[in-house]
Length: 105
Image (cartoon, rainbow, N blue to C red; front, side, top):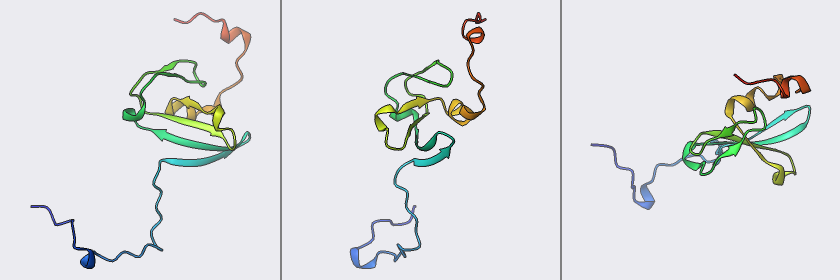
């Protein structure tokens, strides 16, 4: 049997709210040479349509966990990234004409 969780109002366990740090969302902030990014990690259940990742230019299928990010103050320019593409975004080299037109095997 699991322990009782619905305590009467006057008998609830006392928690010190000042010591607890609560982050109700999965939102964080990351800073790089482009500025301060607001970053949200989405679960597969909350991803209800496909998006195109700006990192690899491939489709992120529905119900796939991914990252949504935008620069501070530019929420209208938010982009959906594969989690791996977001974490490696600063390691990519610039795309050249040769790599853009190279055949894909």
